Length: 103
Length: 76
Image 1 (cartoon, chains in turn brown, green):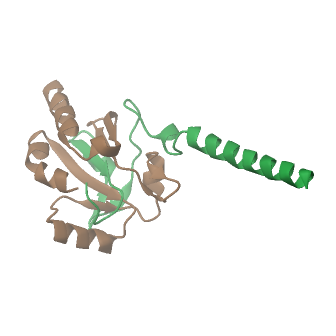
Image 2: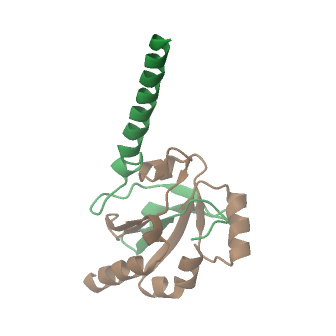
Image 3: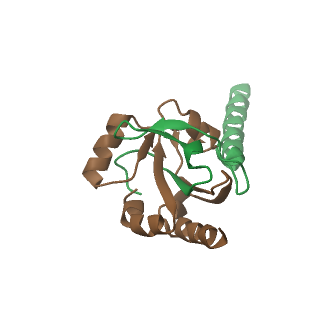
């Protein structure tokens, strides 16, 4: 999430709204945000329903797998990146810029 | 004694077969992770400040980046 915070200006200038999502509690996310200086919303999915519906719940550890989805204005997924590659937001940034140019 | 040893080898064989099977299976989440072109399921979740966020509220307004992360206070 630190990498997203570092690139937040780039992400927002491409017209995107950024959300972090995990199965953490709201309290854990509040601590995480204040300790790391994260200014974008960190969404709490303690029931794991949303994480499951996106197919990113790791069944062994019962936590989300690191995956980034870029969703366009129509609600369609336009970019997916997972694992180590999803730490770096630059793929998401360029996907957002492509979407911005199209619209 | 011989029967016992045979049973032992059979047992080891079964364990190895199970391990090999488990290793060659795709990760359980890989099969159904949403793909490009899929519809992003709507949700309402609460952020760290107690604000409710609904995905559908951004429909027609802006691109949304959903960055799923493993756990608070972990790198990445």
